[in-house]
Image (cartoon, rainbow, N blue to C red; front, side, top):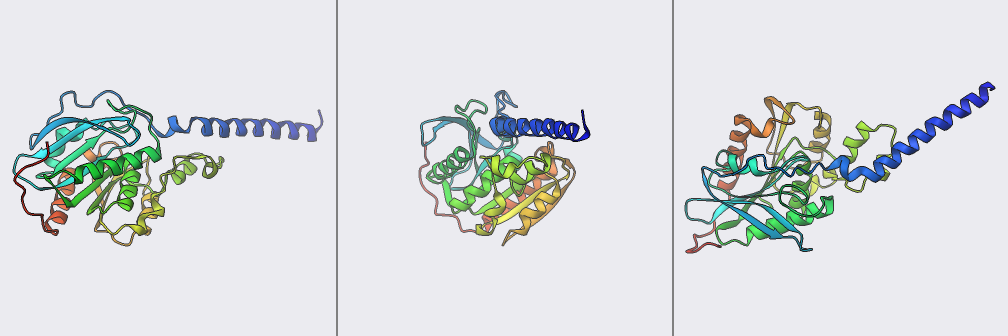
Length: 288
C-alpha cells in the first residue's frame, strides 16, 4: 500500500472513531450529565432544629416529586430556603444537617426527577420549571416570609439555583462549587468534540449572572477536579453583585457541604441577609 493510501486509511479510521464518539455523546448525554441516586443517604432523616415531615408535590405536568419540609419550632413567619443538589446527590442529608446549615429557617429539600423517591427523568427544563414551582409553593405558605426566601445550589444545582433566581424575586443566593456552564465543563473534558452543538442540557449560568440582583455567596473547594476554579472565575466575572467569594480550607468537590466550617459560613451569610429585610407581621395560623 502506498504512503498516500496509508494516510487516507488512517484518516478514515480516526474520522470513524471521532464520529462514533460524537454520536455516543449526543445519544447518551443524559446519562453522562445526570447520575440519579435512588438510595437515601440518611435512612430516617430528622432535623434536630426543626419539625420535619416528608412531602410529596406534583410538578406542573403531574410528575411526583418527593422530599422534606423542615419548619422552625418557633412561631412564624420565617425566612426560607429552597435547596438544589448536585449531579449524584440524594438530599436526605440536608435534613440531618439543616439545624446547622439553616437555623430558624424553613427549608424545602426535594429530590430531582428520577432521584430518591421522585419519579420521572431529569432534564434542565424540568429542573428549572420544578424549581420555580417549589419556590412558589414555599412562598405561598403562611408560615413563610415571602420577602426572605433564598436558593442554595450545589455543583449541578448551582445552575438550577441561578436560573430560578433569574425567574423569581429570590432574596439571596448561595452557590457551592458553581461553574460557568456545563457546555464549558464538557468542552474541557471532550476537547475534540463539538459539544456546543450537541448538548441539550446546557446550564449556562454565566449567561444569566448579570440579570441577578440578589446578594450572592460563592463557596469554592480548596481542591476541585470537577469544577476547576477557572470555571468559577468565568462565572464570577459576569456578576454585578457578589457578597462574598470564599475558598473553604481542606475541602474538595465531594466533602465541602458536609464540613462544619462550610455549614457555619452558610448559616452566617443567610442569617445576616435575612436580618436586613424586615419580616412580615406574625400570623396566627400556619399552613398545614
